[in-house]
Image (tube, rainbow, N blue to C red; front, side, top):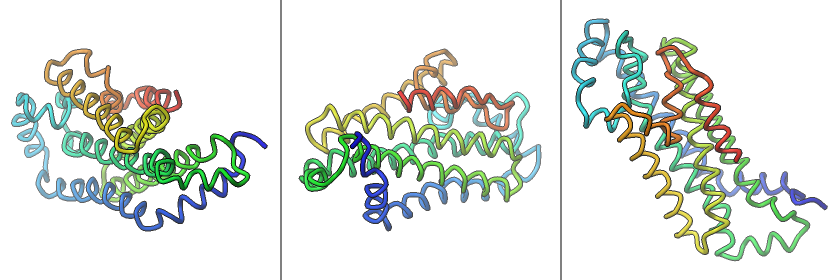
Length: 249
């Protein structure tokens, strides 16, 4: 028997318990960004409209705080507008999904004593949290794949589409990891949610301050790392790797 004995059966159980909740989260996050992507094509139909958007948004600190640093504004395209309009909110949405669902299948399970019933069977010590991370991580990847396909189908460049969707995925993975750790150090599901949500709030705040001041503080936030992929603005794939490393750690 290993610490992951029973992982496959627990993954199946997790999927069965979330057979409605998980598809709803995936549909909500994916739908949010794809509806925005589709609407932008009619709102900004030509280069002149894109440049007017950049002129309006680029120097407004409040919009920068909620939208991002404006990578690519020096040579704007419709993909840059898409990033500015959807990236931060897509990252927040997928992070919240990861936080709530990982907590549901870790600390909340222990609090309800359902986890004790499962551990009474042939189940490894780490199988329960590992199953939660596997399932929620897979849901993140599904959102990324659907978003990439949707952006490309709407006519956005493929490389930028993959980078933008990838920024959602890696942010979700980071906060899945954060919640898994919080579940091990906090005594209740409510405290776990509080700690993980606080980490997300700090990440958003650091990113916002760094973007407004155009300084290195944005690199103290995993959301800032995800944005550093520079989708549609000369992609930097290594920035996504920072999030993957943090999630694994």
